[in-house]
Length: 340
Image (cartoon, rainbow, N blue to C red; front, side):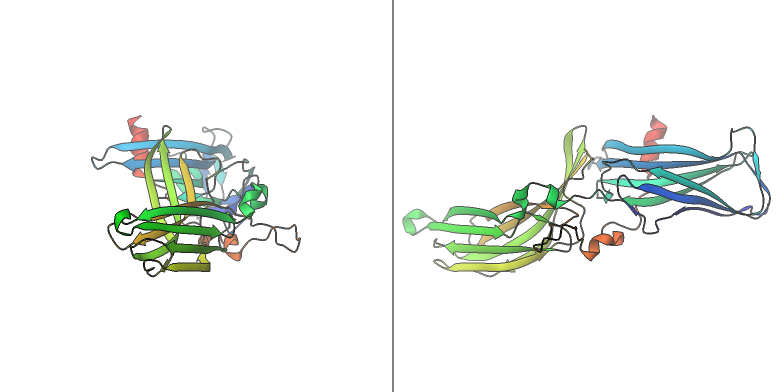
């Protein structure tokens, strides 16, 4: 039988595929036919979902899901009983809908994700159904100017920790760490200053500052898995007993990352911290200071008084934030539906 359907595409007007909650999602479903073709219907579906999927060592599955969008429309056909006859050539079926406010940002992690996609299904009288998918990206912006003002101020943390044995000259390590502020956007740098005073008789092997991402995956209200990774790290050398080391405006570059706390999502949480770690040379435990920070999408207004928000160039490029492809076919989801 000759091939009748030459092309079946979902095309968005916004070729970057990046959208914000409240914007219009518009485009067209394009068909190219080789011959005159009877068609019962052309259905179009816009979906957004958050999924957490964790498998244990025994292959037991913990699963939870949230739905953010499920919008369906019929682009062709009044009923499933009266076919429409499409002529050879190209046919275009436009669509347009407003995305709801409050959608969480697209996210892809090891144990869960938030994704948005469109599905089109073309049904022929013979029962044959042609299907296609197209992913798009949602970013829910967070404006640092709308967050608590304390995020624009220097962030300080102090600690005093005893090392060694007191009766043989043990003493305390004093550490003060200062970040230039508590809120950032990708493309900016975190300025780290610190003063480490080693009043103990134990040599400090190294000190380091790390920008860390922690992702918590939740199912039925409980944390079922955690991902934690160091994104950027600066390390300095030893501090001898009685010595002092001073950090002056060392910088941690903030790479392209999703914002803190995926607003609108209740099953995946993201937190960013700067950890300052003092590593003693002996068997003494690490001294660790944790400074939580907020990652947003709109930076603070500049000091010149310009009230317009300016994004770092990287934020305007969706490919630097999220994968260009996200999971569409997931066997375990289909298995779940079949079992139900």
